[in-house]
Structure formats: structure tokens, C-alpha cells
Image (cartoon, rainbow over all chains, first blue to last red; front, side, top):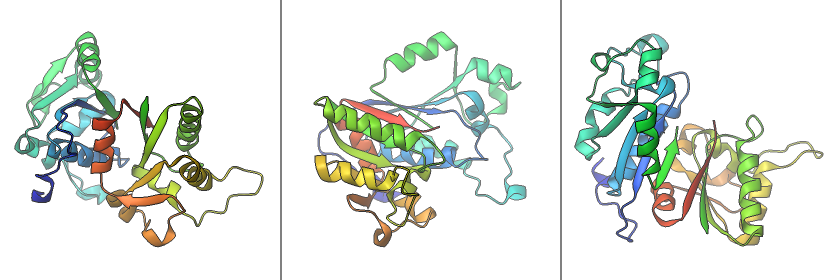
Length: 131
Length: 119
């Protein structure tokens, strides 16, 4: 991915980008292709936040094994995000509760937010992209 | 105001591309600018010139092309998503071009609003 390290739109502007991951990791392509946009945005030195909500919280679950469905397992990428200076990872408390998940079930360190806290965080963003 | 538009679904199955088109056309009619539309996920399937929908229905691909020709809208198709789905330069309708995801990120950085159409 070294070819992405030098990207610059020339403006020097840094905006707050939030990526809202709402879908399960498999079943549709949104999570996989969404992650590509996240990495490129970080390569543009933007201020990136990732939010996992609804079935999106399943993207971070430990023990994902895709052998049986014969698709690429990209869950390791979430652990590599730190290397791209992507350190703001948030999960929605209600989505976790509804699915019986706790932070111990996830492969990366996250900040768990209430609906109100999430709304405040969203309001601070310049760009919100939803996958 | 400058609007960037992200289309995440293919034509006909989803309304996303239609709604994005109507939004873009209306924004331009009202004096706003839509410098670029970015096609991602199955949205890349909007760009093919091979589609031949029935005469009594809209031609999703062609009306994007017309908007591009009339108003200089840059129709950008994500290369990685396109390669997955068999979309290549030789089957693009007029006005579309294939490029990288950086073109999407640039819209977010440079324009006043980035509006997503999709599931």
C-alpha cells in the first residue's frame, strides 16, 4: 500500500471524515469495499473516524472464518488500521446490546458510545459516508 | 453550492441512481454546481454503454451521459470496483471515465457537500 502514502489533493485542507459501517462483513460487498475508501482517505491525511452500528458491529467480531463461504477474509485489515493512523473506532452501544456483544468479543480496541454521544460525534463531522 | 455525488447501486434494481440523477439535475437547474459524480460498488454498472432498456423506459446510463455533456459533470467510475464487475474503458458510455478512489475522497475534501445514494 506504499503507493497510497503520498496522496494529496493539493489543497492542504484536512476535513473530518466519518465512515458509518452498518452492514455485516459478509453477505454483501459493502464492508469490504467500504474499507478501501477508509484506507484511501487516511492516505490523503484526513481526520478519519470509523463507526460500527447495526449489523456493522459484526465486522469487528473475533473468530471470523470465511472458509465455509469461500470468500476473502478481510477482518485482519481492522487490526492494521493503526498503521494508517486510523485510531478513532467507535461502536454503538445499543447495536452491541441488541446482538449480545461486548467489547471482549471484538478484535480491536473501540470506544463504545450511546446514541446521544454518537449523534454529537456525527454533528462534528464535515463528511459522513455510509456503507 | 458545490455538490459531490456518490452512487453506490446499479441501475434498475435500485432507485439510487435515478434519485441521484434527479438530485443532480435539480441542483444544477437551481444554480448549484455538480462538478463530479462518483460510481462505487454496483454503481459502476451505471456506466456501461451496452445496456438497451425498453424504449418506453428511461435509459439510466444515457441520461447520466447527457447530463455530463450538457453541464460538464465528471462521471468517475471506481477502477477497483469496475474491474471486479467486468466494466472496462471499451464499454463505457460517453462522459464516463475510470479512475481511483482518490477522486471520491477529493470530492469530500473540496466540495461543500458529499451526498450518498445507495442502500
